[in-house]
Image (cartoon, rainbow, N blue to C red):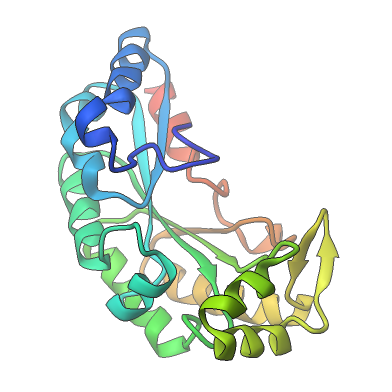
Length: 220
């Protein structure tokens, strides 16, 4: 997996091509590859990904560009990520979209989520993973420095949070409602679905990160 801790397509990748060299080595040795990113720069490496056993997961948390600029200031705008998903799909590469995180009162509006899921389907996405925001200690304090109003709203949403391994989880019934909503939209559009770290495995129809598509490629 490239990468589960930090985005493999940082701005410096344009110049240094470290991720590209990693892909070259992995493709040469026949390793299955799952790329997880928010960047459309991944399409630069279509030549390598097309030759290997690869799938690409791109995070799209909202179609709202104002929201994206606020919450993901270093990431390309949503329309560029959608175009990247379409290019990858047209090249025959299995594509996964992550709606992660879903933040109470910010990007969890049912109509907006439905529109997003429909757009992902139009882009050729095969699998959608959804997950709610899980703040860590100090999150609300840091957010309050940037947007006190937003911090106050989220603090209210998480005041009855469950703490699991240092993360704050929305109450289980709230998570069940939100994840089930997205699941319904995804299955209606004939894509596979999974939640991530929600303890709602019974709602998933495939592996959380989309690696099921790599397993299928390996059997071919």
